[in-house]
Amino acid sequence: MITKDILKNKEYNFLNINKHLGKNVILLGLSGSYAYGTNNENSDIDIRGITLNRKSDLIGMTSFEQYVDDNTDTCIYGFNKMINLLLNCNPNTIELLGLNEENYLYLNDIGRELINNKKMFLSKRAVHSFYGYASSQLRRLQNALARDSYPKEEKEKHIFNSVKNALYDFSKRYENFEEGSLKVYIDNSEIYLDANLRHYPLRDYKNIWAEMNNIVRDYDKIGKRNKKKDDNHLNKHAMHLIRLFMMAIDILEKEEISTYRAKEKELLLDIRNGKFQKEDGNFNEDFYVLLNDFEERLSYAAKHTNLKEEPDIDRVEEFVMSVNERVVKDEI
Image (cartoon, rainbow, N blue to C red):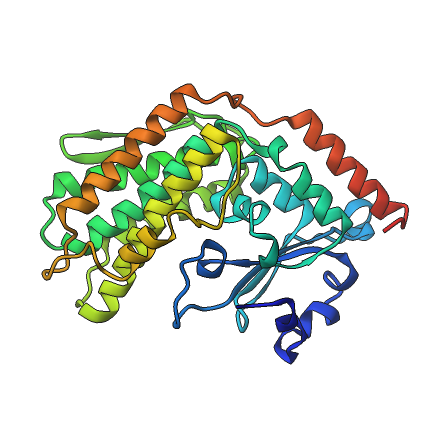
């Protein structure tokens, strides 16, 4: 079991040394397999966290978004950036608000305040964000299993769906990006793009184009198969695919963020350990029946959820102003 004592190890000294961290950190928690309850002896320790923006970031000339330490697989988000990610129900960050209590390695009063108010971030945006991530995981599986044998028409459909999900995300992340400004569609088994952008920031366009380029590039990669290594990755992708559906359904049906999958732990570990994989590397029928069941459940939950279309922006804004005002007044 990973405990708070891990932060005393010298490789985590950056937490006390870096000027953006230290007393500004409000939350640190386990991420990845340890957070989901699906860890094994080979699992890495991933830590995610949140640190307050400093006074100079808020009313001065500095800025801060996140700190990454590759040596310890640690990523700590600036408070303001994290809020925007949470508003979009980003699966990789919203899960930080639903950890088991023992998986929080550090939590101060403001961190606790954030967790106690987590429901203000929940909305139907979760349908697109989680389904987008799940679709990406599924297409990774499909692409890896039959990359060389896919007909062009089938491959184009997969790329198209990935780009389409990305376009929805762009409309949320880029302030001046209006949905429909870029239209992607398939014509005669080829993907086409219509662009209608005027007076648009060049750097934002560069980022959008780079993300779409990465999607196409990833699908065009063809490499030799290392069966043992690839099977481990495939089973891990399959497990996370099902886990994403589980979390999304909880959010939509119960308005709860349940990161640790206690009830489904055995099933998820069975998937990770290859019990649904056939000798040839493909997945058996039981896995696809399971997948279809979760897709139908998510579709039903999306149609019948009591969540609103958008998160409680006014409540979130009040909370953010309250926290940042305390920073500016040196009350923290």
